[in-house]
Image 1 (cartoon, one colour):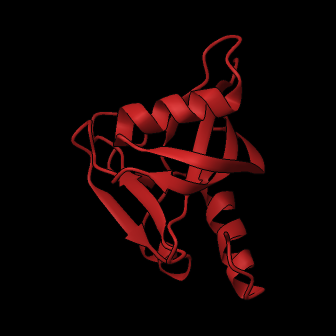
Image 2 (cartoon, one colour):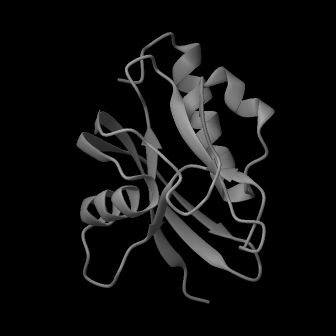
Image 3 (cartoon, helix red, strand yellow):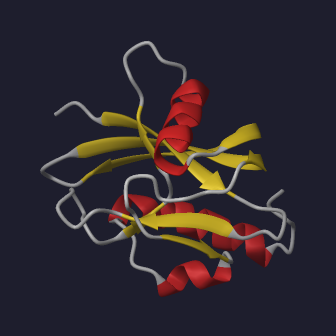
Length: 137
């Protein structure tokens, strides 16, 4: 099974809050919360895919992103390769352009939300950064 390459944005505002969105109930892993992003098209650079997805899904742009981690994960019925970037310098106000609920939460509050299994390493990395008392920005 070929893994779907996904550009994922950990979108962080100036108050160190992180943007999450709820997956549509009829989607794979529906109803769970996730970090925004989407499929990387063939030949498309990850940062370009991330910019496109954030614009299409949330109506926002950004001035900076940096790689955070890569998460390969096999659900059994679907394999994904999450290419996760920390996104800062937001332009615009995020809104769920596909009707998805959004929430801005602190890294410590991420544990209150249910995420797909592939997103767990992202949550853990963000909480580890919090434990070092270093700001994400």
